[in-house]
Length: 125
Image (cartoon, rainbow, N blue to C red; front, side, top):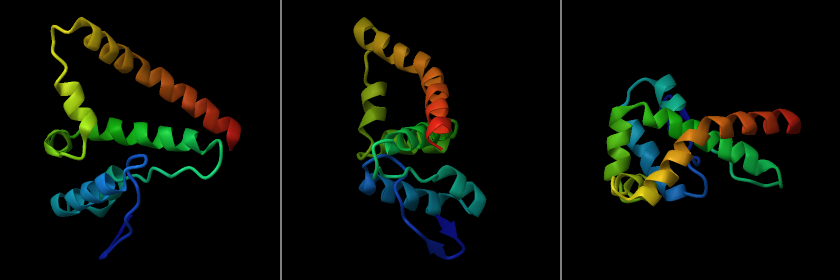
C-alpha cells in the first residue's frame, strides 16, 4: 500500500472504503517506517467469488488483532466516528450480563475461528 511517495489506497476493513481511507491517512500521518505502515495496513480483499469471504474475514481478523496491540490505534479507533464496533463494545455496561456474555463468547472464539479460517484457506488454495 505504501511505496515511497506513492500510496495505493485499498480496503483495510471489509466493505468500508471511507473508514479504510481515514485509517490509511492516519497511519501515513502518524508513522514514518514504511514496513510498519504496510504491516498495519494489510489489505482486506473484497470478494469476487463464493469463497473470497474466507480470505476477507481472515485478513480483517488479522488487522483487528494487530490494531488491538497498538495503543495509539486503539485510541484512534475509539475516537473515530467511522468505527462503530469499538464504541459499541466499550459502551457495553459492565453489569449488563447478556452483553458481557456475548462479548466474552466473541473473545473466546476469535482464535478458534481464525484457526478454522486458516484450514479453509488451505483447502481453497
